[in-house]
Image 1 (cartoon, rainbow, N blue to C red):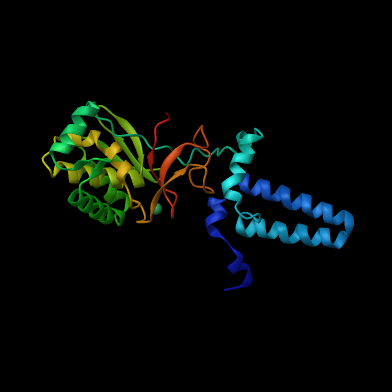
Image 2: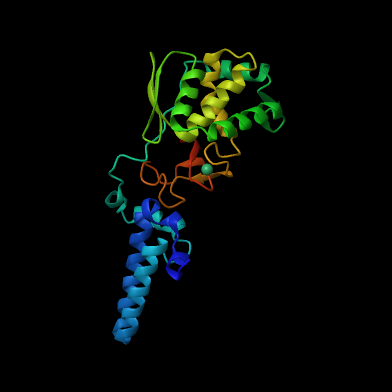
Length: 263
Ligand SMILES: [Zn+2]
C-alpha cells in the first residue's frame, strides 16, 4: 500500500464525496494558504498544495466537517448549488394497504408480533428473531432474486423488477419504487407477520411501522441508529427538503431504514 493509498478515504470520496464538505474545505485551504502566502510565499504554496491533495484524497481536512459543513452551506443559502442532479439517490415509497392503523396495531398485538410493555410497544423476541434471520438471508440475494422474493411476498399480483438499485413494483393499486434495504426489511416483515396468521393486507400495512423497530441494517447487517439524513457525506444527502429530517439509518452503509414523520 502506497502512502497515497493509506491517505485515501473512499467513504468520503468518489461517488460518496459530499460536495458541501469539499467546498467548505477547499475554501478553508484557500484562505489559510493565501494568508500564509502573504507572510511567506513558499509556505502559502505548500499549504495550498497539501491541503488540496488531502481534500482530493480524503474528502475533507477540517476534523468533523461532515457534521457541520452541510448545515453551514444550507445556512448561507447555497445548498441549491450542490443539488444532486442525476436523479439519484431516490426516496423510497411506502407499501400502503388502506388498513386503519388501530386495526393493524390490535391485529399485531393479538398475533403476538408486538408486545405491549409499561414503557411502550416492542417487537416480540421470537418475531424479531425470525424477522432478522429472514433479512440476513435476503441480504445475500441478487437484485433479481430479491425482486422475485418481493413478488412472492406481496399479497397481490404485480410486476416486480430491479430498478435504480432498488425494486419497482407495478400492481393493480400501487406503482412504487422501494430501496433495496426497505425491500429486504418489508419482505421479511411480510413473511414473519403472515406466518403468525395475520391477514396479508394487514401485514402489508405493517411494513412501514415495523421498520421503526430495526436494530440491524437490512442491507449490510450494520448497526442502525437515529440520525439525520445530512449527518454523513454522500449517501442520501441532497434528496430531502429538510436537512435535519430524522431517520433510522445505518451507521456503516448509510442506508435509510425508517423516516420519522415531521411533527
Ligand atoms: Zn448498512
